[in-house]
Image (cartoon, rainbow, N blue to C red; front, side):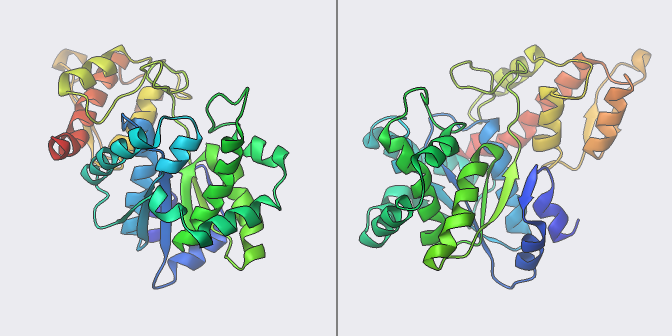
Length: 313
């Protein structure tokens, strides 16, 4: 797998591919992703973590922003509470493979004169309507947004500038914020970042993944919990929007060389796959029963999450 293929696999959009190719040709290149400190690091976070691991392997210097101040502005808790969670989250990310990267606490970067001045300068150029639209998919309680939530996307733009990165990674829900950065940062002599967008995966019930719904797998879940959750997961015969297949595509195959579907000999015996494409084709052809697929999913997740569970103990 060449660097471009590794950098782009399991993404939904690169803005732009030509700019990414040019970046990959440079001897030094920097990328970042920001995470609001959370009590649970789960498979939703792992999508962008996997992409950062890919980009590090492709030659990027990686920065992880533990965005405590963003979490505070987005009504996720007091600064003290989110600050306590930031260190735990860093340990989780390290356990997931993000080692030898730069970790920065948001409030250490953002509470200085140069940063604040850039935020104010950007705020003069961005309308309230665009700021609101950019937050629609990432903000909390956006039926009644606060002024703090309108500052959020402007600060995210300033993060890109002040961190000195060439590229930004985020879920596709970050797209509108990233496009603001590409449009407005050049006005202040900062380059437009290359934007690498990953998909938003379904929760285990086939609906939007949500901590309030409990339809996710945490990296801290026990082996039994992981297997039980997978066995209860929604797994339709269709390929599209199938959360179990999404786990194989975005989590298991990027980290394991292959998987084995274990079956009794009377049902055809074990099946081994070395790529997601092979697995998807076999499932589409009804060569794999959903229950067998879910069991293999649980076994695969137990294996790839074992290092982080051991690391954070």
